[in-house]
Image 1 (cartoon, rainbow, N blue to C red):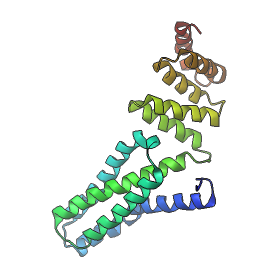
Image 2: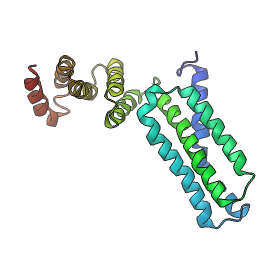
Image 3: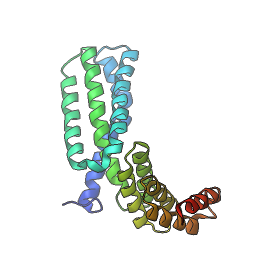
Image 4: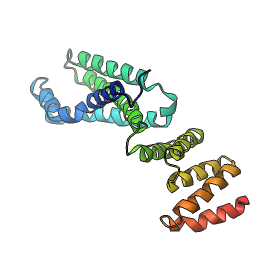
Length: 214
C-alpha cells in the first residue's frame, strides 16, 4: 500500500493535482481554440468553459460530505479517465449541444477527482494538516454527518492535543450527539487551553458545562 507521505505517494498526489488544475492554466488556449477551430462565438466558447467549471463545483459540493466513505484512488483514477475520454469524444464533434453536455460531465468528473485528491493531501503530514482536518469536519457537520465530523475532530485532537479550537468543536459535536462525558472533557480542555484566545466563548462554555453537570 502506497502511503501519502512516501515519495511515490507525493508524486501521485502532485500529478493528480496538476492534472485537475490544468483547466485554469489552459483557459485562454481553451477559449481561443473553441473560437478559432470550432468557429463558435466568444460568448458560446465562454459558456462551454463555464459549464465545465459549474460541473467542477457541483461535484466538489456533492463529494465533500462523503469524502470519508470514498476510495480516493478509485474515484480519482475513474474520473480522470472519464474526463480524458469525454474530451476525446469532444474533439470529434462541433455540435454545440453535445459539447455543452460533454463539458458539464467532464467538469463533474474532474471536480470529483480533484476533490478526493485535495482531501487526501489535506490529511497528509504537513503544516496545514490540522487546519484542513478541522475545516473538513465542519463541512461534515454542516452537511448533517455528525459521526464523520466527530471522527475527523478526534483525529485533529490526536494530531495537536493542545489546539483549543479542535477541542471546542469536538465538544460541540459530542454534546449534540448526547455524549455528555466527552462533551464535558473537551469543553474543560477548551477552557484550559483557549480561555484567553477565545474569551468570547468562555461564558457560553461555562454555562453549558454547568448544564451538563460538569
